[in-house]
Structure formats: structure tokens, C-alpha cells
Length: 245
Image 1 (cartoon, rainbow, N blue to C red):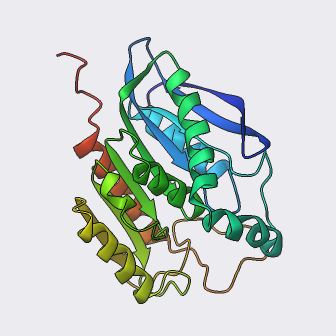
Image 2 (cartoon, rainbow, N blue to C red):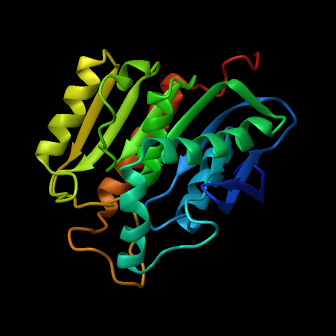
């Protein structure tokens, strides 16, 4: 296993002091980088471990914060914060840009080679960065099929990969259709993977608090979705590019 280093980083966004998790591979050379967005509950060890896993693959990885260092285990509190956020593209972009600035400020980050991988609300933030015209190499999302303002998807300049559970009541077929229609009309290089039998947040291991109806962990599909994310990065953001032989 590759030696990595990690540290917490504080930065302002959305009127809060965010606490992200930065993971760096061994060495001193510049590397491609990945921004990782969490589910609506907020940054947890799950996303931190994903950042660490990507660092082990050779990426600079920043798992960003949504709620000022808090994890919102109470569904009502989570919805009260996330629903207004999801309906406000400019707020989502502000959160995304603040995290992107932190990632770009890391001296080892190759600012021309950055991707975003997000889950739920964090995935919606990643899509809004794309709709804002940010230079990204790839956008990967899981259960974040949130459509944007009319016409703005045309600003997305990279491939978009999206995953969703077939039985996800929060992202039902009509929402899938609206999202893929938006991507297709905008001329985006998009793909959608529907994981059979999976619910919302199927990638997220079970936790010891009350979750919303329609949310459930699917171990097999969680592993498959992670492999799909890694494959997306290998295709669009190869670690070896620019490193020499």
C-alpha cells in the first residue's frame, strides 16, 4: 500500500467554517486531483476513506465539508439545511468553488487536471461546478440527478458519469429522464448506470442513526459504483499522464 499523508483543512464557505479532509500520495511531484463531495448528512469517515483510497492510487484528494464541521444525523435537520441548498445553484457553486480553491492551493495539485466525484448533495455541488463552466476533466455522481437552470449544462466541458439505484424513490425514473434529457440536449458526454434493486444512498454503509425511508446500503453495488468511479478517473484523469516513464 502506498504511503499517504492526510490533514484537516479549514476554509470559509456558505457563511460557515468548513473542515475538509486532504489526502496526499507519497512524493513531491504535482499530481491530478479529485474533489469529493459527501451526502447531505455531511462529511464523514466514509468520504475521508474515499479520499485516502484515491491518494493511494496517486491522486491529490480533498473531501469537502457541507455543514461547518457537523454531521447531520437527524433527518429533519439535514433536510432543513439541504433542501434550500439544493434549490439554490449559486449557493452550491459557492460551496464548490471554496473547496476547489483549497484543492488548487495545494502546491502538488495540477490545476489543469481536476475531477469532481460527489454523492447526493455533494454530487449536486459537483454538477453545478460543471454548469458554471469550471475546467474539469470528469464529473462523477451517485444519486445526484439534480437538473440545473435551463441551458447551463451546455457549459459542462467534461464527461459526466452518474449512478443511481433502480429503486431509489428520491431519484425516481422521471428524475432520471429529466437529468439525461438535460445532458443530451446540452451535448454532454454522459452516461448513466442504474444499479438494479438499489435504494437511495446505496453506496453509504449503514450507520447507527435513523435514516430516511427509501435509503439503504447495498454492499455489492457499493463496490461496483466505486469501481466505476475509479474507472472514470483512470479514463479521464490518468495518474501517469505527464509523470514521464
